[in-house]
Image (tube, rainbow, N blue to C red; front, side, top):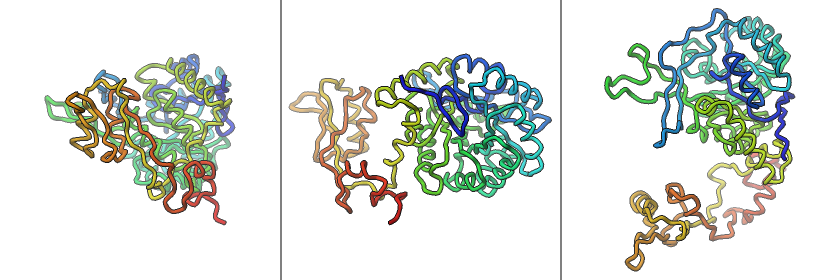
Length: 433
């Protein structure tokens, strides 16, 4: 079977699945249970100065559910650790002693002055922790105090704090980035310029989940008042993947190690992050709604996938999909695909016809020779993939290629593009002659 062992910034762990800095990593009891279950590492819930902050005692979490009550989006207004600093330090030290083969990274959030970083980082490093993760992403509570996303949204602050951390620490420094920005590249470049050894992303997204339909106040609320929180879970994965891929494929930031975070629920999600440039992944929401035992499905699924692909190690998967990511202007406009419906699988629900007829290109029939039958009209189909997206039967509607596919400007075949992407004219990262 494929070797799932992982090395990130010289930190070894038995697999690439780490628990993200969050409630599941708030204390030794939780982390010990996670490591017993088989997790490869944990990022300790964010530490701050003493005295600790105070969290609300009312609802901290809320969720968006699918029709079958599965959590697909999650929101929280919890702040960084509310436990005494010394208690956390003692527990981190003990966990690292008990589990020397697991990655133990400590998330840190401190005010923007160099003296504070110089005071606390050596104290935390003395626990034996493997690395720091600088929390520049928290979108609620701490940002109002000039920390978290208030730092992560200003590249100059990111670089400054990264430099302070690197001066005060002898272990690797990871910068955790906020998605609450227009462009992820300036913050990532600032982290790199500040000497950070890696970046992790994404942190949570500013969000309000809904209102209380009886009182018409926002929900959840504390004594009648609420605030925006951080959105995470399965629904944020596409946003996270885009940001990871942007960092991985852009010349100024490529080559910087990435720890991927955001909506990782099963092994396929891990494959997505790894193939798009992450070297390992962090999980939170899935563990919070299903427990630590999900690690078995994550590791078994990833291992089987690597075996099926003939890969012997996780490192062989990292970045494999990055060359296929480009800007819209470089897409091949001569390439043509059309939808095709497998009549043996079709349950004749008509959803494909309705959405195509109402909102797309009127390219699917609903009757043929008086019989209820759904077929694609090739002349009208633009290959938009809407019907594939809404069909309730997996693989009933698929896309088929109708052209060989050549770049309209260069005449290069698609297969050649994939083989020679490094030097292809469409590759924005190619080395200029």
